[in-house]
Amino acid sequence: MHQPLPLSPEPSGAEADDSAAAASVPLWVKLAEAKHQEQRRRRRLWFGALAAIVTAALAATLYLLLRPPPASRVTAVEWTHSVIVERYQWVANEGFSPPAQAAEATRDGERVFRVDKVPDGTRTETYTEEERCGEDCSRSQTCKTINGQKKCTTDRRCTTKYCSRTKTRKVAQFKDVPVMRPFFTWKEWGWKQQRVVTNANTSGTPAWPTDEEIALERDVRPGEKERASREARYRVIFRTPEGKFVNYEPQTLEEFTRFGVGTEHALRVDDAGQVEVLE
View 1 (cartoon, rainbow, N blue to C red):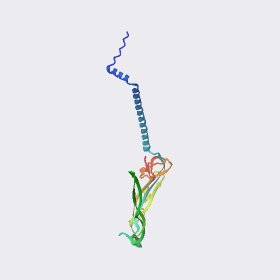
View 2 (view 1 turned 180 degrees about the vertical axis):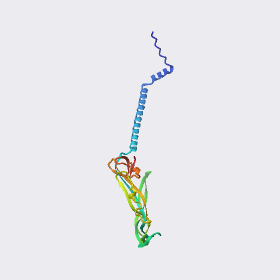
View 3 (view 1 turned 90 degrees about the vertical axis):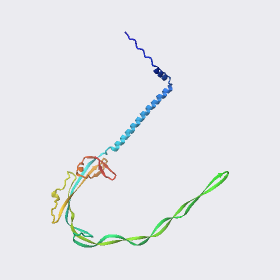
View 4 (view 1 turned 180 degrees about the horizontal axis):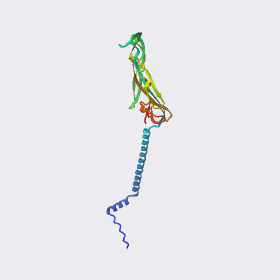
């Protein structure tokens, strides 16, 4: 058997009132509300698009600012390892005051010890000075009509006038007077560079001269002795993406070994040509 269809529930009093109110809203009000909602939707879309454009522009700017520069290629390297040998020995010296331990001190005439400035009379100097020499004045007249009568007033304005005057004055003058002192030559014990032993190349592993090459204290005479110090210099030549060649000088051997020929590194070169390795 067919069951009877259920009857629709009766609308409540509040729903009936809402339906009636909706039905009573004029059409122009509904159209205005729909237009207002559409405008709000378009504004939201416009602001969203603007925000996306600004975000993309900021991201692009940050990328351009923070991205590493194009890599430069190492085209050549140079290294120099030097050993400076000094010898403590009798050395020739000269000056105005031989030390107490000096030997074979010999007077060698007189030399200029200093130059003094001493007064040497006066001289006449010409100069120009600005002085007051009167006034520059101007007059202006202003007229008004009051009760049918014309009345005028005169305004006088003046400014100070200056003129250039040529004058003379006496000024002190000085002359150079050399002060002479006896000059000496002598010998004394002291350190003096004897030789420099160097290893240099544009390839291979940097190495210091051997002990045999340095030959420390070989052929020294009685009382003499030698000491050695080291000096290293490294140079790397880069070719930039623009085709320019720039030089960079690593400060240590460990840093120098990073720059093999053919390797690429990011550089920053300032206007003065100073090179900074970024990576």
